[in-house]
Amino acid sequence: MISFEELGVHETFINALKDLGFEWPMPVQEKVIPILLTQETDLVALAQTGTGKTAAYGLPLLQRITKKSKWPEALVLCPTRELCIQIADDLNEFAKYDDDLRVLPVYGGSSIDVQINALRKGVSIVIATPGRLLDLYKRKAINMQAVTTVVLDEADEMLNMGFLPDITEILSTVPEGFHTLLFSATMPPEVAQIAGKFMNHPVEVTIGTRNAGADNIRHVYYTVHAKDKYLALKRIVDFYPDIYGIIFCRTRKDTQEIADKLIADGYNAESLHGELSQAQRDYVMQKFRIRHIRLLVATDVAARGLDVDDLTHIINYSLPDDNDAYTHRSGRTARAGKTGISIAIVNLKEKYQIRQIEKKINKTFVSAKVPTGKEICEKQLFNLIDRMERVDIENTDIDTYLPVIYRKLEWLSKEEVIKRFVALRFNQFLDYYKNAGDISVPDERMSSGPRDKNPKRSHTDEKVTYATLFVNKGKAMGLYPSELIELINQNMPGKRVAIGKIDLSKSSTRFEVDAKYAKAVIKSLTGAIFNGMTLKAGFAGGKSEDEAPPEPSRFKRKKPRKSDR
Image (tube, rainbow, N blue to C red):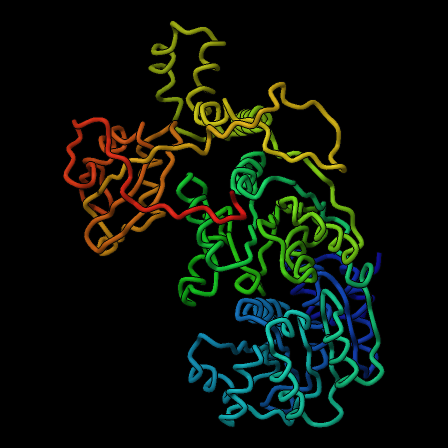
């Protein structure tokens, strides 16, 4: 195996790489770095997201900076604010032991005056989104005359987002003789067009097969009826207890609806789409990066440029309109040599698109059955037991309380203690899935195996009668849907309470819950403390806690779309 030293990387940067834990170069780095350090050439590199492209071009850029000008000698163009920040962070980490190298990210959604002041102090490399860079140029805040290299990172994504005119204008402002380095996951005709127009006999480097998906990603699809897609999503998520992934939807509306449903059903999820402000996007992404959120429901546009490590799953709730986008979606898992799973939930009309994607990525999907209730319960149970076996019991204060606990439980046998412990933590899954039937649609590729004894599908887990309740706090007190759901889950331990619509006002909140739990929810929330305030709950419309049965929900429900009937 070749080392960074053998590739020609300077010791200054090797020390920084060691601090980051990078001992050996990845394939794209092994191929690209020697070319950029020894040749004056244009370059096209095709490699999946997460394969180490930033270091492949970043290390040579940093090493070849002359520091003769206060204006940038290199530009890196990328499609989104998030990717812009990530690339700049990476390059700054690589250059941590060279105080004269300055890397600056410039992007929309942040103060342009702050960026102008930073440029005036001098900068070696500018990482930019095309629109903000053009704005700075037109304000004469940046001088391009020292630029010798332009990198187009995620070129196919920039073209998908309509940046071709901006890129063309930017390249026309750079002095003749500059070199263009184009990095892309796929090579659609538009990217080839840019290469033909702005590049001179570029060296081409391809990691894997052109336009193909990564080898360490397993591609799986589940076929269900359209109306069962959400049920299938929940079962898939429940089948993978340690899931950390992105769920892709086609539209903003679908994204928000699916996220709201998951949150209402007790899942640790949030939405990411174009209608969120930049501050909201940053807040959601920060929670996702530190794993306070395990499921991010996103559109393709909102997820562009996301760079999150260790994603276990990508779930395509809706297949993308452009098959190239599937490569970008799936490429967000299985990074840095790790493995990942890319899942598609399709109805009968969408199966043809699976065949098209297979041809595009040169990979075969595995057709699988949606997990049954029994399979899910087994998986969750074993995960619980595994966690119990691994729990750290050293250096805790629990020993102080053990004598009292032993006396309290001495009338129970070891078997009874285990059974009750498991039931305490596990009854919600057993209760929810006890009547759950098979929702898979038979597929010619589906692997054979034992099927449910009762093939008749059960929909008991989607038939819920709701009651409408209120709580005496609202948005002005910091109560939002996720906080309300967390309150209910905390105060109703061991119960998975179905939650329907949530209607927020400044000073109060109306919400739906499964009618059979309505009184218990009222009792548990009344007197509970939220942000130092005491809550009061009851039936909406003046119904008292003692009145029964609860009134059915007054929220108007949308009629099902024809495709879902």
